[in-house]
Image 1 (cartoon, rainbow, N blue to C red):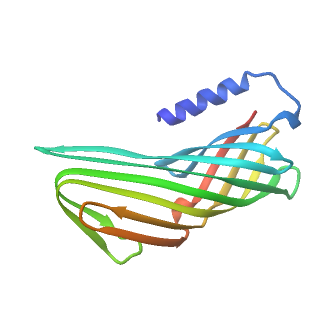
Image 2: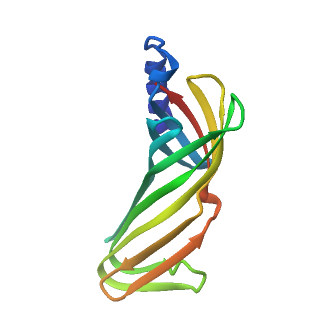
Image 3: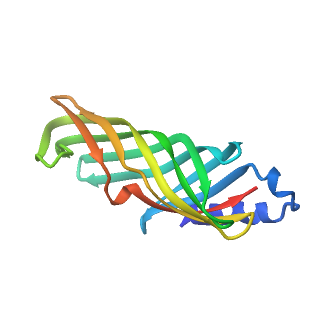
Length: 198
């Protein structure tokens, strides 16, 4: 809810700015969702006509669990940067396409006990056991942006996009390591964005 409040405040401040000619609207700020509990920010800057540099920041999660003398901390975050091109279908609707470099990081620590990590490819999971466990999970990949954008007016638009991707990741812990390769898309690859130009 705090993310949504911050976004609405930024939008409100932008609305108070003086109205400029449409060709001076070179930046876009929006909020993107892939589900009701998955939100992130997107920022785009116009490079040239119908070409934009895009940056997505997808907030991950932070979890703390305390059970007796056992403490578990989990953290994850990710983002993407890339280039987007637009092709007009009519004066309101545009096709969008491009590529993104996607990166993420995850961290799990546990005082003692076991942590189960999904192998990520449907082949099961790996269990890490012991004390003072630390598991780091970095990932990197490339995504292909495909979608459509509807412009309500020169300032506001909504867009829907698919981002199928190819990603490589690994989980590295005290005992063993897991390496993954994933290609395709799932529900988190589908996004809906509402954005403001300024």
